Structure formats: structure tokens, C-alpha cells
Amino acid sequence: MKDHPYLTFTLNDSIYGIDTFAVEEIFFLPELTPIPEAPRDIIGVVNVRGEILPVMDINLRFGYHEEDHHITDSVIVLKSDNLRVGIIVNQVEEVKNIEDTAISEEISIGRDSIVSQRRKFISGIARKDENIIVILDSNHLIHYIEKQEITQDLSDLSQDNINEDYLALEKRPVFCPNATSEEREIYRQRANNLRQTTETEEKEGYKPLAIIALDDEFFGMDLSIVREFTDISHLTPIPCCPHHIIGNMNLRGEILTLVDIRNLLNLSQKDMSNKSQAIVVQVDDIVAGIKVEEVVDVMFLNPKEITSIPTALHSFNDEYLQGTAPYRDKMMTILDLPKILLSNALVVEELV
Image (cartoon, rainbow, N blue to C red):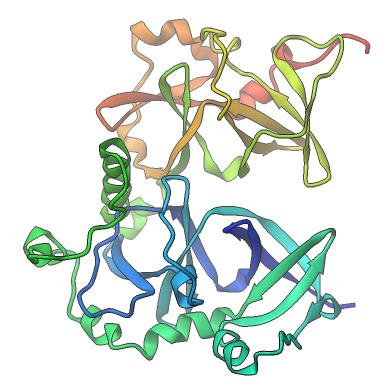
């Protein structure tokens, strides 16, 4: 039976899937610039390395009520030919291979007019494991932008003229009006990071990093070994294990060992918040969850900004560090996560 890879994500507690071949990139939700007279579901645009990207709120596209956006939301960039559009999702999950026979294209709820209107963007419903996945039609989502008047508006915009002069409208909409000042600064910093452009040769050398918080400090880790970000749930303690082995976590049927790397970095062992998160990483054949206080950001870092470990940071056990770099108004430390995970200090030698 033929199957097809779909990137799955959650939105309002529902699971959606989108054709992976249409996905160009994923980043955390940045500050968006509202565009006057744009369709209601196009809530704004963002400058992504010199190109203007319209961003769609799928809730509004499907006719649902407008929901508040959150600092943990992400944007999935879809591309077809020369057209690009971003869609806002709550959390990116994983790539699932779904058999064609598992997708039902015939959906009827007894209200044909509404179904036909909304199904412009839905290609079917799939059953995978114990989940119901709504499969979106990426082609229709992308080419929907082409049919809107916003297309002409965007053609007149450039990297330099989306600025405060352009936004100086007496009653212009405000992006995320309920965000705190700290959250608004994070959104703005993300937009600034996306706006930065470099020469092609330099851009190829940029390091994609996930920024995490541990013991009130910022740490960066190589995004290429990060499988996903997730909340901590279904945790089972493991008897007779070192204290850095927190327990096993059931992640959608996969048993994942959750570890605490703070001791290895000589950080304090104070209790983390109940809202702590886990980063699922894979190094060679090792798959593990790293417990963190918070996933702060995802960014591309110019290697030229990485400097050697200052003397003041040697208490962090610099054997597992690659350097430091500026982030916001502080310095973040770049972790050598493969060395951490392959370290003898994390090997469980006790017999259970």
C-alpha cells in the first residue's frame, strides 16, 4: 500500500497534517505587521531574510472565532512555485507516513453548503494510530493567496519600507494586543532575527539553534539534532537510577527517557516549574528527552558571533560547551549536546 509523509501539528486541540513536500521551513511566531485592507484571515506579514511572507490564521480561514496567539505558537512556511504563505499552529508534532487508503475524502455532516465552502482547504480525514488527523490541501492554501488583493499590495513592499512610517496609521490593528511587554519583546526579537540577510555563502554557514532556559540562564543547542519540543506528561520514575535520570515518558506510544543535564553543567538543582518542557533529541542511536525550564526561541546564529568561554563561566563545566554568543541583552552558552549525551557521566551503570 502506498503511503505519504505528512507534517502533523496541533491547533485548538485538533491534529492536522500537511504535505511535507510543501513545507519550506518552520520558526516560532514572530511579530507580524498588519496590512490594511487584507483579508481578515491574513493577519499580517513578516520580512523573512528579505522576502515578505503573508501569514494566515487558519482559525479565521475556517470561519472560527479569533483566538489569542501565544509565545509558543509556530509558523509553518508553505511554498509552491514562487508562492509562499505561513500558517500559524500551536505546536509542530512530527512527520507521519499515512497510507492513502487511510484517508477518507468523502466527508459529510449534512450541511453541504458549509462543507463545500470549508473543504477548499481540506483534502480528507485520516485515522492514524488512535488519532484523527485533518489533512489540509497545501496547494489550495498556497494559491489562495494568489487570488487575494493582498498579492498586489505585497508586490510593492520591500525589506526597507515595512517600518514605523508604513505602520503609522491612526487606528491600525495591533499584533497580539494581549501580550505582555516581555512577550512583545520576544516577538519583536524573532522578527529582527528573521529579517537579517547575508550573502548566500555566509548564510550556508549559519548555525540553527534552539534557545532554552536552565537555572535562569540561556543555552543554545544544535537544532539539527532536535526532533521536537513537548510538554512533560505520563512520567514514570525508574527505580535505582542516578538522580539525573528523571524517569520514562510515554510520548505517543514511544518510551522516552527524560534526563536532567544541570548537574553535568554544574548548575543548581532547584526544583523546576511545573510548566517545564522537554526537548526530544537524537544523537546517533540515542533518543532522549532533555528537561528544560523553557524553550525560549529558535534562531540562526552567525558563527562569527561565537566566542570562547569567559573565565567567569568556567563553573559551567566547559568540557560540554562550544562557546558563548550574545542573545537579547545577555550572553548565551552554546552546548555540545552530542558530547553531553555520549558522556560517561550520563551512562546508567547500575543494575535495576
